[in-house]
Image 1 (cartoon, rainbow, N blue to C red):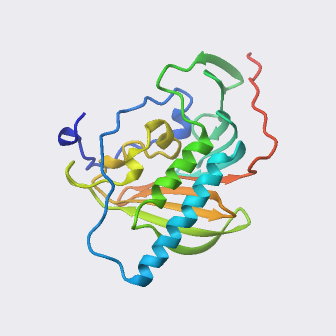
Image 2: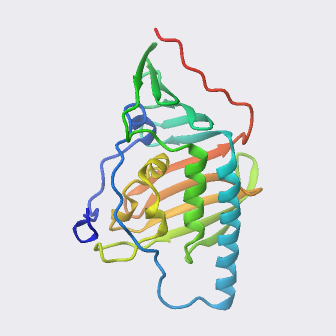
Image 3: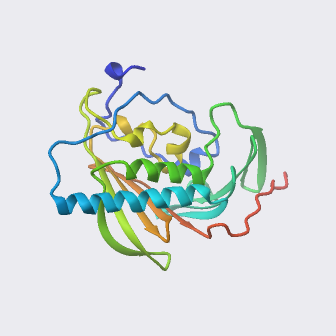
Length: 254
């Protein structure tokens, strides 16, 4: 699909739950070629320094987070159904336990190119179709953070606690795009199998501003959240137990 024919999202999309969609796979979509948004006008020296510092901190966090081999992550309850998820990662393998979509919850385990889905006491096994496997979680988080660090409009919001750790909160607001000719952020250059972890596939097609928030402490990403103006939050994911012992094993099939 070319830039000139790329649709721009103007209506509120149907509610999506990325963790739930993981149980049936994620269809990768082609990402249109884009250019990095340079903005207009120049910031004041003080603003420029702050933004440069924010970019440097985020870049360091991107590098270190991308090197993490194991971690755990959590999506706090959200929505009317109180949807939530807890996950753990070891390299490219992962397990997610989600609640709020099905009675009793659903556990999705991915080992290599095999996906196990356990719900209602029953487990199914299938080979993941080509193009549906998600990228390693830590790499996806690192690449997203790196892309945000490259944007001159990223700003420091303040300090906040995330799971008991004092973090620095950074924010990037991507301007609304009303046509394919409008410049797009470097974030949209990321592959769909990375963006899918954070409900950001098709981020370049929204006609409303998209806000990306990243919390950092100790050169590691502690939380990533995304929001579309006038449409509400996309997702919020917290990171913890970096490089802790994590083993992903196949569930017993019943």
